Length: 136
Image (cartoon, rainbow, N blue to C red; front, side, top):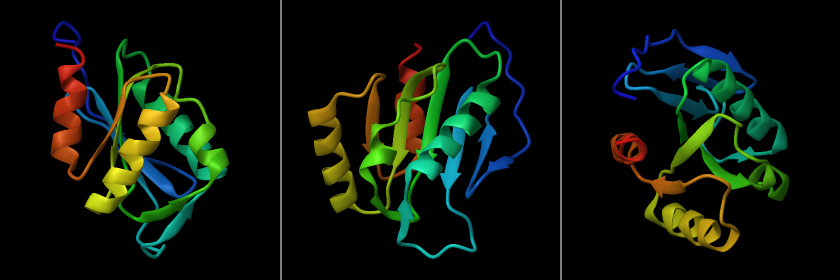
């Protein structure tokens, strides 16, 4: 990734999510918006919106690193969890709001083995750092 010059993007929205492409090459998506209360359900439509956002934002970048801030979400549907990551994704970091959510998410990921490296974090910085380590 060091040879690719990346221009940061303006935020774009899709459904209830918004995202940007950082100059570090990480696509950052925030699920939900200020108009939705914490505790929202993350469903299949939300999952598809995140996938569309990641694909749009990654554009022609050869390495797709996706950080999804899910701190406003407390429940997910089975259909949302079963959607494949974007074709360009090389790694996904999921940011949650509580240690219990992190534990449950990590256990689920260990059982389901996602198509791309995926981990759960409590901070966006830790998630981004891990994603960037995938391309070193």
